[in-house]
Length: 191
Image (cartoon, rainbow, N blue to C red; front, side, top):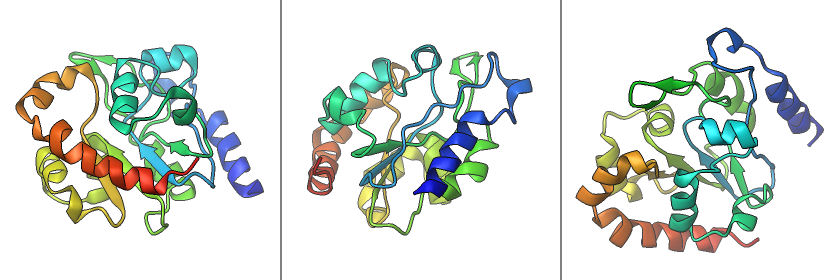
């Protein structure tokens, strides 16, 4: 456990990308080795950066609704670890936030995420899915065929309001797939 605590401290002290970030580095994660679910998303948004709290925005509201988790449970690190692909807010792009910094996941995920554990690993969005699944499928194909990954991973679309069109065009996700995934999550999650 001390080793994991040291890793968390090292992540919080990381300045590797400082030259590429719009603000001073502020790595944001929520981690406990005892959590039975690991949520891997993109990178903290501006509101997360400002509040030092992951998923503290409209995307987080939708994600908590999908997972049927009140904030208290969602922010209990012993229930749910939140490990982003990029740990700091990457800045604003032309159509939303910039992609997560590519340095973070290879440097820190091996210490925090064990794909061979008995934990459920939620892959939220294309960046997390591309990194862990390493297949040539689209996000829609992965989510439609989520059972192909369920021994290790559960792929989810990003809950951003920017994905409202995707959600509207793929109603089967919220109507059929998410309730089935939620049943699996509820069995694992007992906190």
